Image (tube, rainbow, N blue to C red; front, side, top):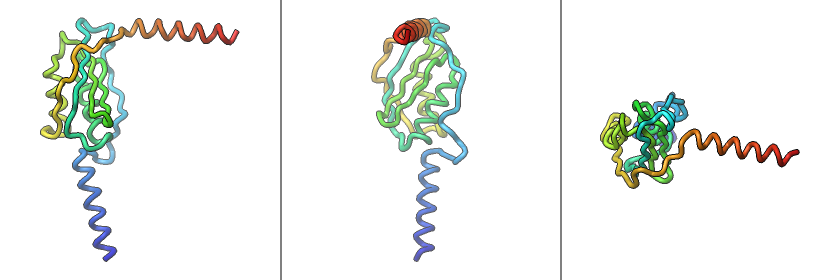
Length: 145
């Protein structure tokens, strides 16, 4: 009886890992060199509803990683809990169709579908973010004087 339960537990675990595309050696935190918003000719951000995800590490992670490798991608972030992906890219190099194809092609394809919920979400330039950070740091320093 114990052997049967152990066998069922092992098969269930294997099915879960296979279903998520997780092989045990993959990590969702691999860094990919992405484009800076300031380098983009036409910075565009899409909010995409992603259907078909069953786990954060084997589904959301690979989608973000694969789409992050596209030439012209600046930011590729997938939130499993929300079922959403946020992608900032140079529209002179990529289209929203390219992003949706990447999503649907992840983990062998046929698992995920993406629907654009919002297009041209406001994008802050990297320079503005740096200036804000410097201003905040300066204010913090003054407070300690």
